[in-house]
Image 1: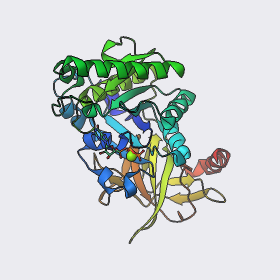
Image 2: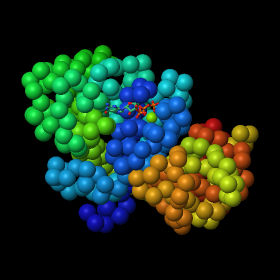
Image 3: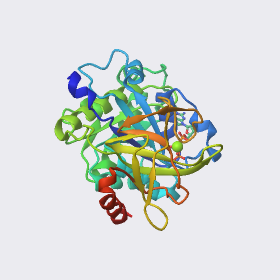
Image 4: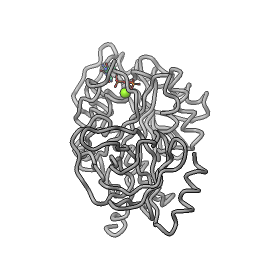
Length: 344
Ligand code: GTP
Ligand code: MG
């Protein structure tokens, strides 16, 4: 396992769902941050990325995570729920190995909940449903950060009934979209059924259950596909082009496969033609920090997928959000340029 673990790729988990249903709040709870408070108009307008190390996940799951965990952590992608950002949701969905669809349990499925699930269906991405805001259910008695199963057992009968009823409403909606589902603790075969995890991004209840399920799914994915092993030159997608004071143009990029080093030649999709440049610096946000708003970065010489990184390089001003990025050897430059052209 140790040898294998060295090459394990961090799985990419995309968080999707309707506006205001609590995607960023859920990530804030996991990271221990308050990104929501820094968002203009309290809505997310860009794709975000945060690396959450296994140690953070284990701390949140204290006691409930068994077995041999071999994934190094999870790279979470935050997406906007506002209807105007369909392109960003598709881009996030395309990058994901796994996804969490966040739905406000009190509001049920809304247009972008359905849109998100259809995107995941198109990419055949396995997903879980986080039935958020259980703390808003009348009569719910919260216990901070408690696993859902334990906290549920402590609730009065009428509260349990509301949870059950609303969960079955979600099961019905998922069935309309072609998915068999149930509350996660009633599911045996997660390859055939979508797990629903009632939780609260505010109180943290159910968050341990969600993380445990995500790790389980990620490892299943790893066994089945070997897709999580890092091999070869880096492949990524530009999230955003940013002009940083004192640095010039930079691209916030998610690498979903392979490796990248400073000095590497990269080809990036540009406004008119592919850009060929050399990586001057790789600036990595600290663990549990959102690349979208972070201002402090660690300079690294090398990184392996999956990772979010700010790339500093000459001639980036024509790079575009959503463009592909490829690391290439000089000898293969021609074909790398052709591949980028074909992808644009
Ligand atoms: P967009 O990114 O704009 O699509 O929204 P979002 O899904 O990221 O929602 P966000 O996390 O910004 O939360 C929207 C509002 O719901 C905020 O006021 C949160 O404080 C609140 N909220 C989120 N989760 C919970 C929860 O579990 N319980 C309660 N009571 N409020 C929550
Ligand atoms: Mg958000």
